[in-house]
Image 1 (cartoon, rainbow, N blue to C red):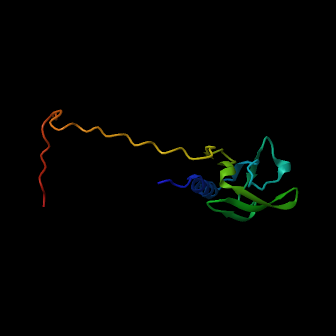
Image 2: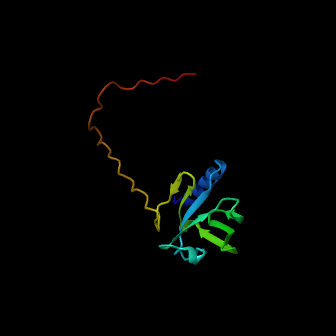
Image 3: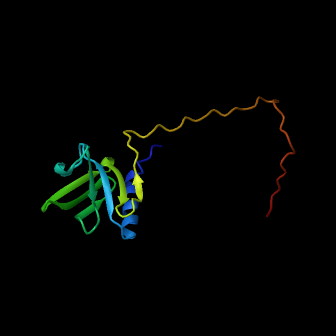
Length: 137
């Protein structure tokens, strides 16, 4: 069974952890992601770092799809949308503690089951004493 990406769950957990420890959560974002809505004038090398602390943003919303909020850039209120896939890392500005997310398009395929070798009837003998079990009531 294929599972959803754990990245949005980790993103939310690290955000809460950073804020609960009175630190400032920063996100590093792939500004070239087609669904990312970020101020392009502040993009450097295709990336942007954003302060998402509660005191720095308004209308903050985080869910499995990503992060949406409003922030001021050059005094102008700007609506920001960061799809979860565009967020490269989240960390505390004060000490750098956080997480870097792997960049991958598709999740790796699950490992293939290995064949179980069965002994032929009358095949190899077991070594060592037989296990003795008894019912305890």
